[in-house]
Image 1 (cartoon, rainbow, N blue to C red):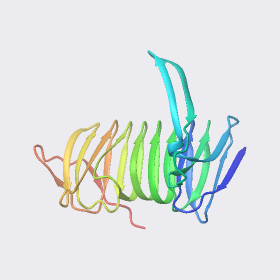
Image 2: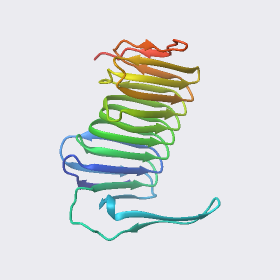
Image 3: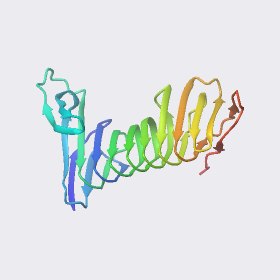
Image 4: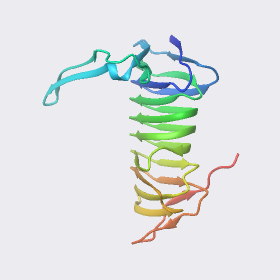
Length: 229
């Protein structure tokens, strides 16, 4: 087992890149800790987003090089400072509750109890629970989203398999859905936001609001009420 920890502070942006599956949990305090059972390695670094670039050259499908380059710092400001975690395999990360996350995984992602903003991209299954603000998300497998609010006004979420979507504060939205059963549209409230849900399986839209079917077919898909604690 390899372990690393760092003092993250409050409202920190944390970027997590995992070759396998990753579990992320919020915790009290300002310290971040990460661990992996795999032997491929684990790194935790504090860096500036503006200082990191990527050089890439390819001929056809063959990549000649793909390396990180560090660019000269043009400012002393630390407003774009992030903590980057990289693990070649699978692992677990504990972060302060109010962290803002960008998570990428070659397999599954499971994120719970985060009071900040979350973007997540999984090649397999994606599970978000008790997350305050949803940003961008996609999954090659199933997706299960249970968040309080959503940052975008015109957004698309896609999953390769079943997609379950619950954003508690989503009370005014035009919903477009394309799943294994076909295409349907609906409206909640005044439709101030737009959400497009694309799934290779079934889409379940979870809301306690009134959902009205839209023309031309006036068809509704699978709609459920949120579970009550």
